[in-house]
Length: 325
Image 1 (tube, rainbow, N blue to C red):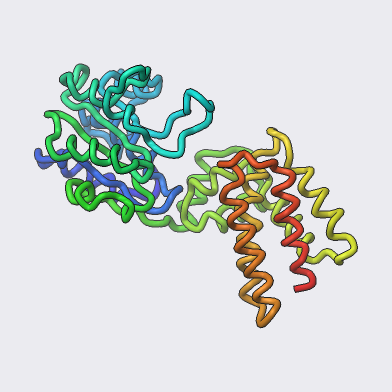
Image 2 (cartoon, one colour; image 1 turned 90 degrees about the vertical axis):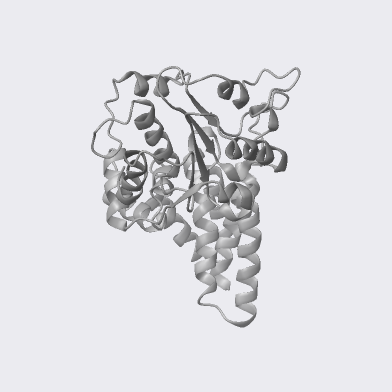
């Protein structure tokens, strides 16, 4: 990993001391690398905690290969799954993922915890994200944290730890992840992407705000050109604004344009927020109203499967109205 050496050192030191905590809470904003840390830490533990730099376990070791293939019998990730009725991702982690339920074909966590570790001296459970647990799921997990099975390691990822039960937080050792320096974000882009031009790289680093996951998410969107289109739209004369807004919306439709569409949903509300800083009086009130409306629409567009072109046109017209605000 890049930029989280202190967190890796603290985690490894706990094992070297011979008394590692059985549950770790990895906190911080989304996109900082908490899930990657959890996965790499899990492989290091399952591989027998080898003496390597950081978590750099040989990818050809059995533990690394089994985890990569999703077949390690001592490893489980609890995350939101698809609903069998709708085929869409559920809004939360559900109880049958932890406890066996009648007529459910989900392999629950309880089945894993009944057995002893088979391939190493630990079994590792990642909860990603713990924020997605409802009250019944949280209470079921709490029982396991209060009375952990021998050789069990829990890694809980949380973007908003204040939403968790205090009793869960109190039973975990916390590692707080901070935003990275721009140089670290740039290094991660260099390691994880190919073919980025200088304009896209500079834009990605700037909008990441220290969260490399955010930059990587938009790496294939042609984000510098999209940002330029939005800037041009914001200065478009009123007579030409509807046509240009419609043209931009059409360019964001279709599955192939999903990365650009999702980048648009991030960039456009942010542009309205930035524009509000320079407005006063009625103009400020109007831009703030547009920002609030665009933010709500952008936040629900993907989850509610709203039509991308309709959403993009609605938000694009708000960007175009900046020319007269």
